[in-house]
Length: 327
Ligand code: TXA
Ligand code: MG
Image (cartoon, rainbow, N blue to C red; front, top):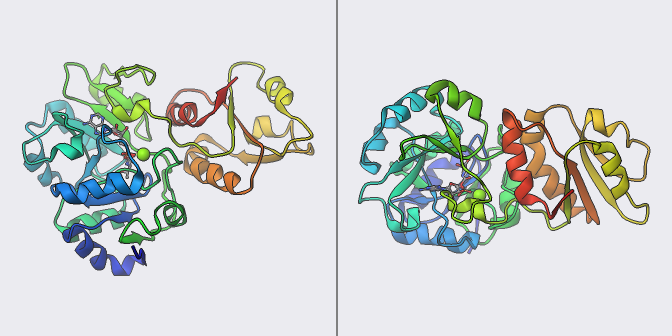
């Protein structure tokens, strides 16, 4: 299949491809999405094929307007109304009870559907022009780090999709927060840029789903994810510097991803040090760093833990799934 790389000015061509049942990768404020008409079962099936995604992992449906919600979901609880008025458009996905019209393939046969209204102007334009709701997972091959630039999407999806819209780098860089509002108590299924602290401020009590549960509510949580091919070690706990030092081996080509406080201990040593200034910057660049280091064929990539609060919770969630080993 020929993949067209489109500039933002060619977005109406992308909208047409979606209307004809094709696949279009597009930028959002979180990561690039791989979109198809959510109500066209045949089109959605192509997403699973293009990504190599397990069929039991449901997709997020993207809308451009709150008015599109009643067509897709049975009811909008007051908790959802509050979150929507505060965080939509933005990096927050909400789980609702679905209406009949949403095909089973989108929800992996389940009764609930994940909905998000992205804030990126190109995502908004694409959905508006197509006049569709768009099912879209992250536009990476299943298991790989999520794409945060059109280049990443080309790496994974060239020849597998009709078009890729180049909208530059994604401003957030990590996937949306996912919250389930179909039960008695709201459950945070995936941490993201809308933080647990922010959600609690609006909702009061919020439960946090255990990502290691054998029967996870969010099926995506059970799969290995975001992984570079190079072995990645996550160093945690106290004594980070000592633990990192013990991993360094002069015979090996090693890269360390570190905060400036940690990094300065390793400057001048025979390892590559990638320094980040703060956690939002790490969130924004993390997937790009992992992909870039992968191309440079290191023997080992080392990264250290960050405090699990605010965006740090989302970073640690992705790192735990991406790593080959935690020490
Ligand atoms: O930021 C994002 O959310 C990006 C952009 C493209 O919008 N999309 C994204 O999609 O990250 P994906 O498919 O990579 O992750 C969707 C997550 C998965 O963990 C999936 O299991 C969960 O949402 N999910 C989808 N539908 C669900 C449902 N009905 N109930 C529980 N979890 C659901
Ligand atoms: Mg994904």
